[in-house]
Image (tube, rainbow, N blue to C red; front, side, top):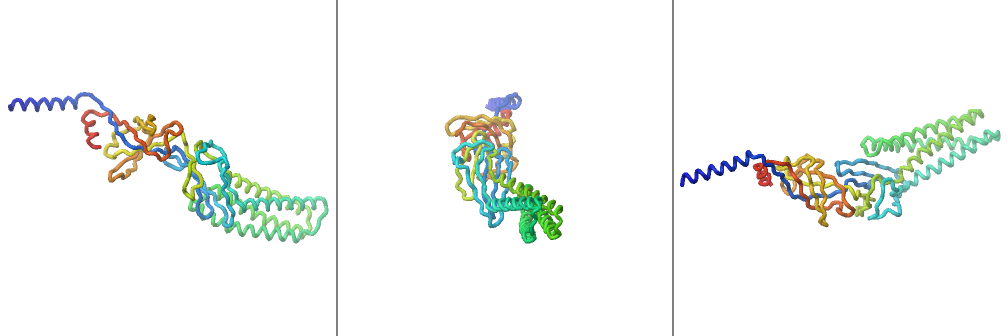
Length: 349
């Protein structure tokens, strides 16, 4: 009996030794849930004090690819109008016009500058033709108005500078406001010299000043029109308009062909998975998409009291095969291991 037990023990040890020594490799795998996200999504939203944000989110790489802020003056009547063809469920293409932002103050300022430009051109024609009349009162009013513009723009620029220091507005927006302030200061200098020229009656210098003022008005109009052109919002991606139920979110466009899947994997077995390992994602219709691990988030997440890492993959899919935010089942293939490690892998799950 003792001899029989010894033989059985030896047989078991030999089997275990063979298991360890034999070059047999087995592929591990797990069944898990994955969260489906559009590879990219473009969001238009509104904030406090007339701020309008546009954000291009890159879910595949995990960062905001583009982020812009447009701010309007207090008291400005701002309207956001969608293109009438842009509705939930509609497909759009990159560079399609999505909507328009209308600023009453900018439109009014452009109209005022155009009026001043025409007045300056008329004044130039009068002086060139030799029909000089008394322009002193007009030039005094122009000077007062120019000084008032500098005063108001200085206050606004100071507020913009604080926002820029807090990184709440873009470099372009900050530089536009700074350029506008400098132009207003130039207008004051031109108005002062023009008034002095009118008072002194030096016709040649007066004509030069009027020409300078005309150029200044044209530059200011150009700056404002460039700003207004930025108020035409175009989509940076191909995608579909999706419904939004948040009052501060004006529009969302999702990429409908390229997707990102986030797959939680227990931390204790995460070393069993490597970049390039195969993933099979099952759609709700039963169709399967095959892709590969392209990233592993090294930030630990706590789910149900257990520690997890997030595996990422990206893939293309047929239209309507997956929905943004959908949770679907998937199978993730792990690394090849020997039989002992294969058994350990499944015991740790």
